Image 1 (spheres, rainbow, N blue to C red):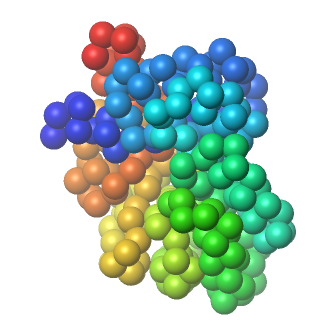
Image 2: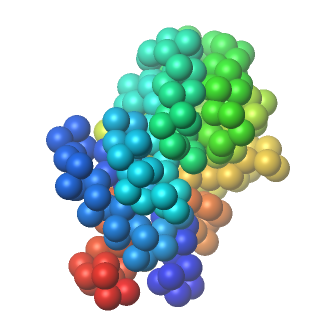
Length: 220
């Protein structure tokens, strides 16, 4: 797997709360130069990024990073993100509902947010570090029945990130229309290759461009 193929699966990500517009511009320019799948940025920068980089695929996050905002709030966030220029949306599930076993409610929320995305791809972050094996399997069903496009391992803000074991578990239990995104802790080129070979279609990371280009995105 060559480096450009790896980069084509990367959501080049910057979600730090202190990210500035200068930081976001640098991220977007790296993504353009290196031809990553998307950039994943805070929603507050979508309009500026769309104006400055009209051909770049933009992703943002909603209900992030804790997931316990109301369904109505998540839908409003998703709809507003689309208006502001988002091409893809990553949402966090309500982990309290998961722990309560309210999987039908989780499914309904996913379906509602998917509808609010106006046809854009929806990735559902399940935050695996807080889940039992049984909860992970149940959430594969929720994501599938809710009509989402991806199941995503992690926010990157939890106690741990993606594991190959979780990717394999997802592959066994998601529906045929659902893809997998790994995020959190994917730090080396070997990690990137391993997660892609395990079945991930996307990887969310802030380090892939620097890692694969020797820190010189513009020369790749």
